[in-house]
View 1: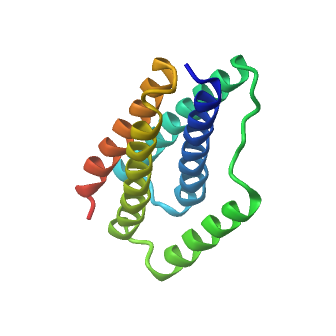
View 2: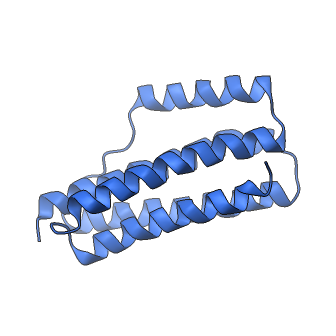
Length: 145
């Protein structure tokens, strides 16, 4: 297997999960308590687990994690804050999260096709886990639209 392909794919997983963690950490304080918030907290825990696993696998292979850059973080926070100021309803938050998860699903599918023959099976398995998790998030969040 191609160690470089493993590192590239693991870094993608790491960054994708980091974006999920950071977005939810920004949104959660603005969401009222209840089932919706509990679902988002569960989603946050899963993103953290995936993020940690990708980081562990990178380190085990001798690579450093490449997190999302400061500019991406700032742009994400600003976008979330502006959208939440305009409309902080559960429906709107669900819509924002579905859009983010859909982008993650598309990117994951592209990466799986790109790296499936090059990357280690365990790395592909983690990528598929992330994709399936994103798909479940979309399905769960549809109930709140």
